[in-house]
Amino acid sequence: MTAIINTVFLISFIAFLYFIGRGTLKFLTNKDTKHSFKYGLLSLLVSLVFMVIGIIFDPAIKSSSESNNYNSVNSDSTTSKKSPDSTSQSHSSKSSSSKKYDFSKVKLGMTKSQVTAIMGKPTDENSSTLMYGSDDLDFQNDKLFDGSPDEVHKAAIKKDKTEANESSKKRVNEGQLKSFAKVFGQKDVETLQKYVGSAYSSIETSQGMAYGWKTDYGMLYRLDDSKTGITHVYKDGLGDSGTQLYVGQTIKQKQRRNYYYYN
Image (cartoon, rainbow, N blue to C red; front, top):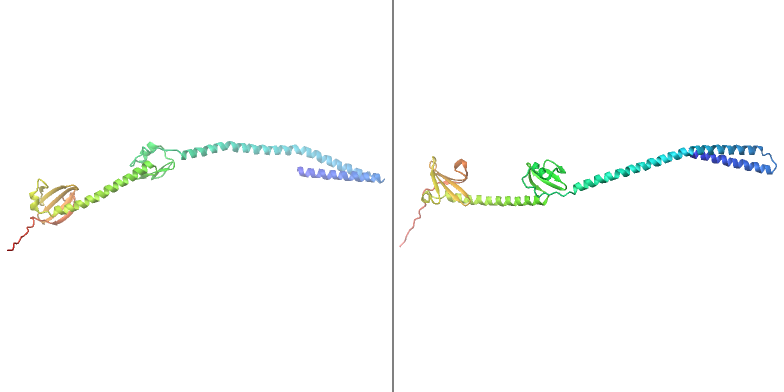
């Protein structure tokens, strides 16, 4: 709107100058100047009218401009006020993620509820994991078995090594026990009877004589079935209550060696 008013004002003012100049020129040459001065004054009047209109509209435009500037400043101020809150939230989040947790009281085999009672609410969790910051605790059947914290992971490695050693030792013991079971099963009855009370124990059952032998690798039980003539050797118990390690023909007497002399 201001541009239109200014344009009309400028055109009117130029017309005023033109007609005044033309009238002056005619006056100097003794020509009729009536119409030139008339149009010049008319142009001046139009210029003055549009100048007044421009003055009237200018404060409103200025007011509108000031209003826009105020809104812009107010918006910047609001954004500036919100910025500290955003910064505070960002700092809070960063602080939470960098928080140091003490896992020294957490032990393998603990349940989730036991761990949370010590450590507090986790930062994140799922069915098999609790997260505390960047550290995780791993569960299987609701029992802690591993995790990223040094205390927990070292304990898990130690437990695995212990279990591996025990498993290896158990396999060795079972192998040795099978060897002893074979020796026990192939022992003749005559020798067994001879050492009952010292090396071996014995008891009579409905199936036949039973013997016991305590070794460094576990207790062995031998049953000589009188009906079948078969010897069975078990560990952990006699018959169905134990595990059979050897079965073979019952040897009743020590095999005699024949010696021949030649003259």
